[in-house]
Length: 429
Ligand code: G2I
Image (cartoon, rainbow, N blue to C red; front, side, top):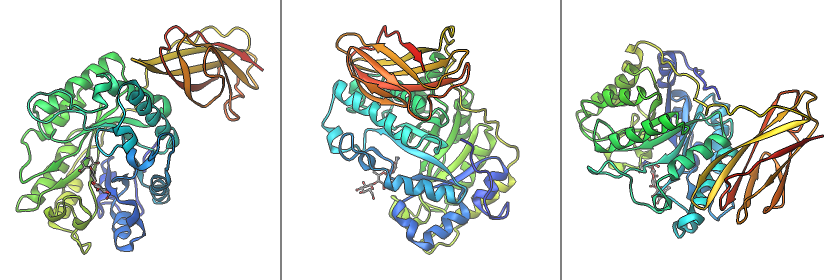
């Protein structure tokens, strides 16, 4: 999706407008229940042109019972953003914390399947409305190991992160897909572990578009903060400052200014989000870590950010999100053809199916897939499945049945067991 680059306010006098002049967004984490507090919403609407839900799009919030989704708070934030020309960051599809109780008690392939289903369902619900998703949050360990954090998700297999990114891409091809973490504010063991993962993903075609640097900062800023952003950008991903807040004290304004300058100096740094609006909204409470005081007044840190935005030069070069290399569609003989690509893990898979119309076009289509023995379909999107084991037939839904010659429709399904070796056949009507 495209992001709003201007706000109603005049350029250069608000955070959002000044960032937009430099081709960036300036966002805030929003507690959705505060949208009805006018003192809060007045600042939000005046100063910010991007939002992220502080808690409401997390797994515990939007899938409180397995398979029962509640998007009401997230939808409210998206509506507010759309009504006010703001882009939306999605936070977060998978995280070891703030999981619903039912998922906390799961493990192995049952958890993996539930997690991928969660990614698919949530990203599908918000399809086309999210600028960037934090697909996976905080999966790396603190300290010197540079390795993964232990968690129930990690114990489903090291490939859980790439499985999540592939499922998110299949569900919402237009959203930028980010990995997000903290204590990555300079070149250190943790940020290097993440750097190596991103490099590996890029080399193997795992869909990743951006890395989020939370930047929950203390009383000093790593001297190589900008260099660290730049080394990630040099891998071919965007970088974003995703949860900025800074401990109060003499350095607060300086640190805010330095972070802003660092982002502007990295052409692929596409925007900055502060983790809240006013000091009293912050999870850091007495740190007074944000840009507005509890009465809504602009702090010195606000002025430092605004001045840095206005002094910055250049616009970012943000190529559109990379899409996986297209698989060559098979020759279109007859009414239609279908090809499948698989995202597999031990015990489950997501299949993405491309239907290509032949020379006569289609009014509707049916794709038959014979599943390997032991495999079954648990969930389907953009098509209607008949059956779940053996030969399963997938019919178009009302909006993707009518295709002109050569036009492609995509649908997907999730399964348990192995999906290897499936050969789809397509029939047009
Ligand atoms: O911890 C700061 C942030 C670190 N990075 C990921 C972010 O998602 C995380 O945000 C914080 C929220 O700001 C807090 O508001 O995540 C916390 C949970 O780990 C949030 O705290 C929770 C409390 O733990 C719950 O007791 C409370 O019900 O906020 C919930 C809603 O107010």
